[in-house]
Every structure is written in structure tokens, then in C-alpha cells.
Length: 421
Image (cartoon, rainbow, N blue to C red; front, side, top):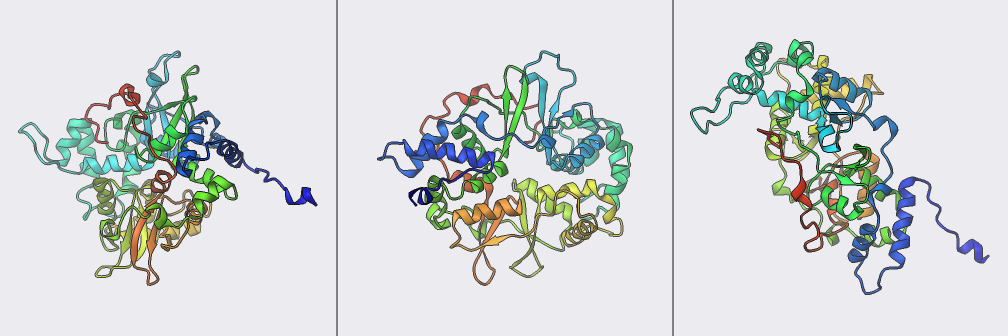
């Protein structure tokens, strides 16, 4: 009978086993420490090498001399949103810093194209002021002329068949991944060594706003793992039932100061706005997604995320019947496409909500189940009360001790010339 009441939780996944490791450390912490201090101490004692590796089909790399078309095909085939780029000119015995030149994303490729169409505010007589001049300055006259010939003008006038024409153009087929390495949403690595701690990784993903942290094997000069915000949230979801997690996860959002983003700070778009304008707004405001509202209304009717921009490249043919592509047209076309292509990846980011009395545990399980990056907090009438992202949740798990990073950032690889990140 005693044995039956002492049943031990048996971890079923690598993430759950990691949670048990935290539990063992939690049990030996000094009793006078606060729960947050205990978690900090636990995560500081675990190296990032202990974090479960990404699925084998996600361990992909893209060569720097691959074309944009080839990069998109590789990302789509492996069902991933981004991948490290290997410098093909690096020697065999290169260090990881010389071997990799950054991470390329679906969104980064599209946003780079959109950037070429935007005139900039002249800062000096030598500053290019037109879309063609900007593109010519960055990538050569031939590129600018071809982009102009394809018809990429303002976000409001770009026709529905533009991206179909683009993906069959010589521009798209010939521009190399390395050609966009100095533009928006491209960044050099701030990587961790395998011996660095979980606490360091969690702080980089939250306070320092990194979406993913590469972990490098210095001996092999290669990336060993890439730990993302989503992967951390999944790990936390697998830790349900463990004492350290329950003591934190059973608290309501307000007890942890969530949501961090109040309703008057949430950026919105109307469903009749051009979709390219919505993506440009996200880039300008540096947000990953926005709620969609009806013109003249206040309640959201949907959500559009920066990662949804990839559907402009992976399924460009679904928009050719539209004279212009509004947010509503875009969401409708993508939903119709996904209904006909059940295996397509990823799914459209839907408008997912929770209430203020939701617990952190329930929120984490919602994030993990829906595979989303943001949840909107609403009242009983559906009115927006706030916004919570993956980063917000992770930021409430740990805190940065005074002077923790020291000179950690001093060795960060400098940004490429003309970088806009």
C-alpha cells in the first residue's frame, strides 16, 4: 500500500527528463531562497548541452551561394522557418565564426524584397532616394531594373500576380543568399558554447529578445543545436506536474505581471489594408504579428504574423486573381490553399485568446498546443485586454542577476556593413 502511494513520476520525453533534473536541483536549494532565486540557481547549474536536440529533419544548413529560390525550396521541404547559412568560401578548418555568416528566414527573404521597393528619407545629397536607386546601390543596376519591370511599386498598388511573376523571374532564380546578408532581419550569431548555462540561454531568449540561440561545438566548429523560444515553451509544457513548475505555473497571469503589452499599445491592421502594407508595418514597428480588425470596428476578426509572409513565396499562384492583395484576401486565399493542401507547412497563425484569470500553466499549454508565438488577452465580451508573447512568458521564469553577463557581449561578431537589424 505504501508503495502505491509513493508512485514516482516517470518522465516520458527528453524535455520531461530535463524537468526532473531541475526538480533534483530544486530539492537541494537553500530553504531561505525565493522560488525565483531557486529557479535561477537550478538553471545556472545546467549546461545548454543538456537541452534536447532539434528533430533530425530540422538540422539543415543552406550554402551561401544558394539562390533565393533554392533557399525557399529547402526551407519548405524541411518544414522549417529558418536555417544557418554556411560560408562556402570558408576553409575546411574554419572556426564556427568563419564557417557561418548568419541565419536566413522565409520572412527575411520577402522583407528584403519589399525593402528594395521603399524610398528612403535622404540624409545627404549622395543618399539614394528612389526604389530603383536603392536597389541599384545595394545590388546593381540590373537588379533594380528587373525589380521595377516586375511591377513592385507601393504596397497599395502591387497586383496579385506580382509574387507569381517574381518566383519565376531571373531575379529570384539568380540572387544568392549571401547577396542579402547586409539587409533587414539578417544578423550574425550570438552563439553559446555547450558549457554555457540554461540561465544564460533563457535570458538571451527573453530579456535580450533573441528568437533562437545557436549552440556551437567549438571542437568541430559547427552548430550543435539551435534552441528557440518555442522549444523552451514545449519543455515547460512537458514539466507539468513537477513541484518546481507547479509552484510557478499555477499562478494567474496578473500575479506575474502579465500581460506586458496593454491594449492601447497593441498595433492593429484593418482587413481591407494591403497585405504588403501590413507586413511592412510589422517590420517598421518590430513586432512579429498584429490582430486584424474590420474597418470601423474594434474587435479583432483574425491575426496575421510576419511568418505568414512565406505564403507569398511558397504559394504565389493563389493570389493571381486579385487586383490587389488585401489582408482579408491574403488570409482567405491562404486558408483555402491549406484546406486543399493538408500537408502544407506551416499552418496560418490564427487569432488565439485567453482570459486574465488564465494560469501560466494553461497559457503555456495553449502556446504549445497551437504552435503559436502570441496570445491575445480578452474580456468576456471579446475586447482586447493585452498581448502575451513567448518571450514574455520566459522573462517571468528567471531574472538577470546584477553584473551577470559581464563582458559576455564584448566578443560578439560585428554586424555586416549597412545592416538594418
